[in-house]
Image 1: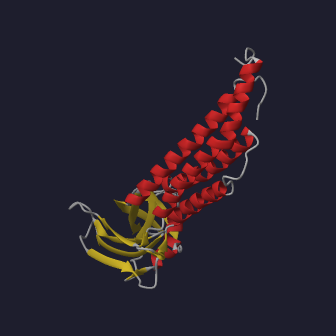
Image 2 (image 1 turned 90 degrees about the vertical axis):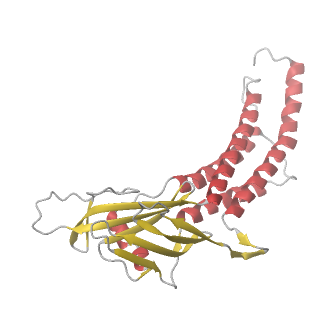
Image 3 (image 1 turned 135 degrees about the vertical axis):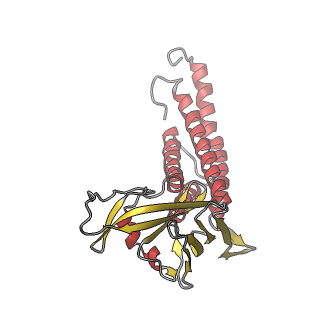
Amino acid sequence: MAATASGAERKVLEEEFKWLLREEVHVVLRQLQDILKEASRRFTLPVGTVDSQIKQENFVLGSSAMDQVKGVLTLQGDALCQADVNLKMPRTNQLLHFTFREDKQWKMQQIQDARNHVNQAIYLLTNRDEKYQFQTGAEVLKLMDAVMLQLTRARNRLTTPASLTLPEIASSSLTKMFTPALPGDILVNFYINLNKLCLLVYQLHALQPNSTKNFRPAGSSVMHNPGSMLEYNNQRFEVSHVQKVECVVPWLNDALLFFTVALQLCQQLKDKISVFSSYWNFNPY
């Protein structure tokens, strides 16, 4: 195709390409800004018209009768501002109840990071307003790659929870946020997985110094299985029970959908730019 393109065809294609750079690129940039501003709003959820007030949302954990962990989590933007948790101990059936102290809240770093990446993508787009004239296709591709990188990072923060070791969970300030204080043989962790807010509760069993078990500390993981071992404060433990409960956060689902649509728009624009290169036997950018 590149070899057979006539001079007239080349002229037409050059005009079409100039129109794409001058007009259509800005149409796509406006669409992307609109989509990402909607995504960004999902992370703040203002109450009424006062943007500084972020709505508190309550989410119920453990709706099944079989769940050993039940409770209510209160999410305010990227902060878990209250947790009211009831735990039924597996072996003794003892009921434990603990809540966040009134002066404490837990930052959901995944949500905060995802929002920051979205806002960075918006910043990149608004830096190229409608008065800006793109001179080359390469310039558009560079911008699309930068925006897609931020959106991919935002999505990955929500879809890929951090892997932690058990000592990292045990030493986290999260364990000191509850009243009454968590028993020494209980560990907890909160994280986001896709559109779900998850709570993990680990019950530990202390290993005696004369234990014949081969002690092998567990590595990093999102969720540790029973039998995993750790050493903390010169004491060795084994995970005896793991309880996981989760609740759907609808606006996280919206945000993930917006990310997908925006990434598709970016890729479609990149493809249109690239199509023109197939008509030349040299890089037209």
